[in-house]
Length: 114
Length: 113
Image 1 (cartoon, rainbow over the protein chains, first blue to last red):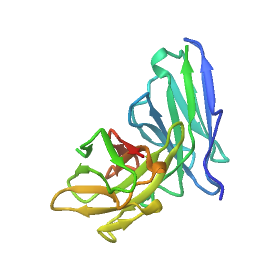
Image 2 (cartoon, rainbow over the protein chains, first blue to last red; image 1 turned 45 degrees about the vertical axis):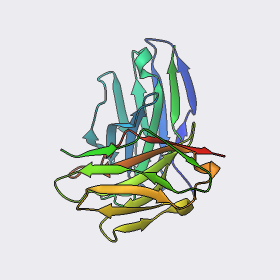
Image 3 (cartoon, chains in turn orange, green; image 1 turned 180 degrees about the horizontal axis):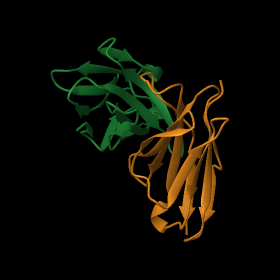
């Protein structure tokens, strides 16, 4: 079965550069969630989209922005990167927002800022 | 406010012995609760979920968890640990009124040969 696809798997950027992370949800899923997991940390919710509109917002820095496109894929744009942005970024998708069956997570994008 | 507390940051068991990973939640009413496993450099995989249908929930790989409202607990158990069970385990609550997860801080399970 198709899963959530994230690209790239690994990304190395320098401080003050920009990065774009992509998430392709499971086919027909219309909701996407972004999480950030720092080294040794639990995942922290960043932002979510439902039907191409932002549905919820967590601890996402102002330097970050995200959107969901007409094909439901989502992109997380990160500017003025800082060393502290180094983390594993997960995307999850679901069909609708009443999700009691658990999200399906992608394998994540590991961002390293040097 | 909702929160999830994983009582042990590290648990070590011998292969073939039982596993117990403890999780307590706080919520004004019964939340949806999940256990996820994360192997090194891998994504989060759903082990099992509680959504008020049954208090004893069976998941994949022989894991199960029991929802105990009186104790506000949702501990994860497995009768016999396998080496491949070594991973980080997250207890997760779905925040009421929104659709985002609240993660516990994780328990790292080590399985000794």
